[in-house]
Image (cartoon, rainbow, N blue to C red; front, side):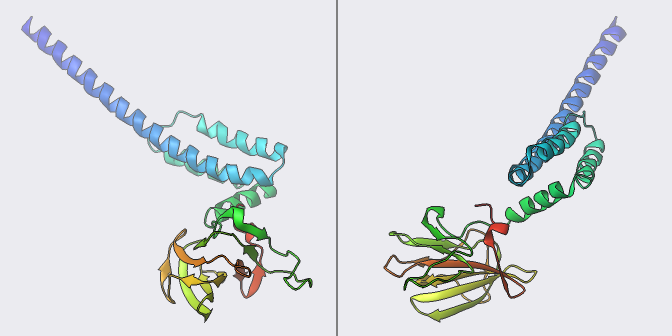
Amino acid sequence: MGRRRFGSRMGRRSGTAGTRGAMGAKAGKTLVRQIIICIVIVLFAIAVKKMDHAMTNRALDTVQTFMQKDYSGMAIVDSAKTVFSHLGSLPEAVETAMADGRRQLAFIEPCNAEALIMTFGGQGNTDGSERSYAGMKYSSEQELQVYASSGGTVIAVEGEEGNQRVRISHGGELETQYAGCTAVYVKPLEKVRKGQLIASVTPGDQSCLTFSMWKGGDAVNPADYIAF
């Protein structure tokens, strides 16, 4: 009887340990699975804006198939690799949209979106003449707070006090410029992070922020890098 009870207790302990191990493994799989799902959802939320419904459904079906698998151990890593390898075989338009989505996650608007008064290529001038702008213009009756659109290095602070331009390099010949700043809070060679307050624009008749992006010395449309 003693042996039987001892064996019974050992069996229960082994069963409990096995149950706990299984629960831990299940929790680990669930966590990794949720992380993968979150990454995919964020990328597709941006990419879906650039695709028609047929392409979107096809891409989502591919991801959903792998998300519904019962992952275990190294299969989690292998399945994640398989998901992204299959994404690479999707139509070119989908791949482009996904690439745009990842790129747009790296940049944000430099200030309050409600203050936007002119987009890239907009026409107009204060003296009534026509002029095509290579940037975006922001103006407000309230002081504008200017933020770094992405992380990088301040390469120059130019102009006179009260009307200055901040230039930030983001690598890969990509640069953002913030002109018309009445106060600047950074200096050349300073490292800045995305969303860091770098300047401000005091309201006035002629006061506005001109935000522009440049690649290899040529002006590019900020809308190609920022999800407005």
